Length: 342
Image (cartoon, rainbow, N blue to C red; front, side, top):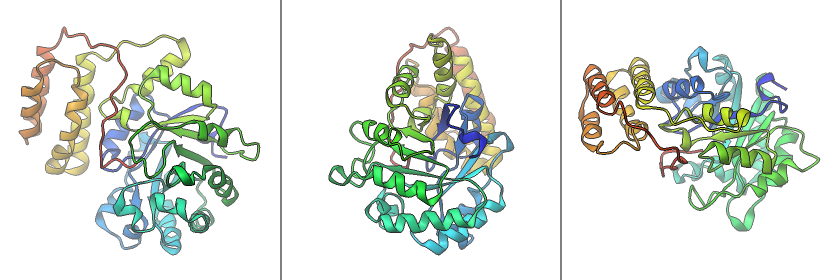
């Protein structure tokens, strides 16, 4: 088993999130304590057709390692060929998405759809495992709906295919991101004596206290965090500190928040160009600045400004205006971000 998947070392993993977990965001999370980061999901069909958007998602910074690239698709040959393309850029592992619940993916026979067709799941997984020398992991959900929760059978079949680890989002496809996640099913998989691979849990972790509670209660080998890291990449650092000491770190002050926001902006512009880089940063400002009173005026200025230097000046102004503000320690609100697929 790859060193970074060793089940003896508890892992904090950044979940793959479409339109969010690009290289600038992943670096922010890695620097803030994430052990493993994973790309946005990439269409296998897009890769084999050399689609520009799909190929761009293969890129990553060296400091992201250990780093995985996630692919999805419903065609066996496309998955096999895309695994070969991914291997060529030398990530540390390949992750397969069998959990995305959004309609445009499911209707293509990919993502969470395969929870309804386990024979197809086995074929797709085996095609990838056999084609690459890299470790292969899978991200999936509990089942299609409450009447067809089949994660126990899924876990055994995927392990038999040769995957190196399994991440489970503790919701069904039909739940999307609503309601509460049910980690009891994850614990059932972890406690199955047949299962030997690491099992990572995902869903609703939004504080160090909850991370420790779920680690202890459900016995998983690691926790995957998605929405709670948007605008709060330091959640990984906070969890590690709490695990080690039993004490909570104080919330990041305004200087830390502005600094990481500026770094994120600069990397985004450098990676994607000024127009795209600035536009894609607009979704992050509200989260980085959440909790500041009377911030709407500044936030609106950030959203309508399209020059990097001007945005940095606005951020500097915010930093000066709130230099003595003390943030309250509280669980992170999990935003309902519809483009997210984790």
